[in-house]
Image (cartoon, rainbow over all chains, first blue to last red; front, side):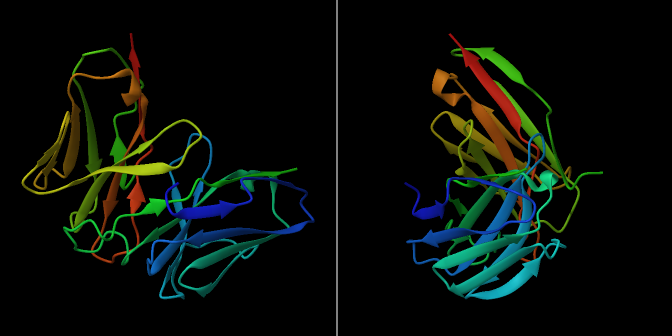
Length: 120
Length: 110
């Protein structure tokens, strides 16, 4: 258990469905992230939130809509997805923004187990 | 050119072998460097941060060469449990935008 919990772990949806992925962290971190991991591709950063404010949207299509009501919770709302959106969606958190100039390790990413999404 | 490039692998080595992975990055302004480990169908987990002076953690040694813009990971006395994909991660000065390499897969065989 990493302290970052994602639900559901597996999700199958049709292209016309609306679903949401949930992420909750119990680490007291201030920054939260959504990453996408497709087969044979590196992790792709999607969104970054710091103190529940969005600081990064990595040109993600609008069919993915993030929501961060507080520093502990992060959602990814999904609607009218395409089959190529099938992937593992990973949530992560860090004390400060990841990669910040900290030798203490406080700004490294802690990942959840991921939500494996299949779009039919 | 990819921002972060890793040895394509896969690496198949016997137990006890020493194996080294290399990773190059294109952004000379990058400030933070990490190696993560990802087991099959699991999430990535931090293996170690990489510091300018190089650092060691048991059987694992990480080094950074800023002039040549590459980082390396050396694993000594490989164990079966070291079998995983190793991800190189580089972060620029604008914190929050960590870039992951494709990963290098290691299989340690008995």
